[in-house]
Image (tube, rainbow, N blue to C red; front, side, top):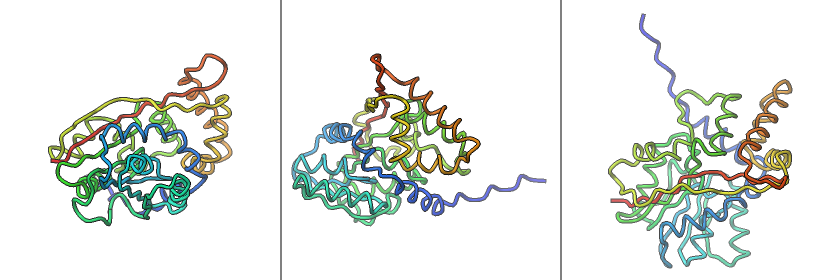
Length: 274
């Protein structure tokens, strides 16, 4: 007898679950830790005032706001309305004219070649269908325009956190880990010869907390994926999950004064559309 075919991955169901996950807690609070990488990403693509810039999976708007600070005509899109509202409040506070619009990074509603630059700061990497998302980034970017990406690496702290949680909650069959976006080989597979790789650099984003206990308490309260993990894991495994996460935080701690400073490695990549 032949091997029974595997059922097709239901991306729409996965996306619905993801939307609820990212809407839990308050990711805008978590995103305070990645403001600086957003500034660095805008420098990496060498933004010009007046350029049209799309920040895909913008969350609460870090990269979009960074682009607007440089005089760009910035648009941020995300599928979590609550996070977009935080972005609008931040733009208003800084008197920046960023447009925030609800949208799906796997099916952007913007015309072909309508932006000079497309950015994604720890965003598109979480889309279930990696190829479709990469194709959309390319589609909306004009020829000669740039795509700037910042993605957590598999071997870095956040890659290890996601790998740990996947031991408790195995991903759906057919899904590629989000941290594959943090590898050059996967990006070359996704984008192929449609782009030129202008820059590839490993960077660090620091997360500072009083202790591993404080870090876990903070992320359990505000980080949707972690909040949902503790809801789903069940009473019998909740303490073990907490212990494993705190051990990982301690392993990556570079502070020597009793506090906690975790450097999360990410891959910063600039692509030029051919």
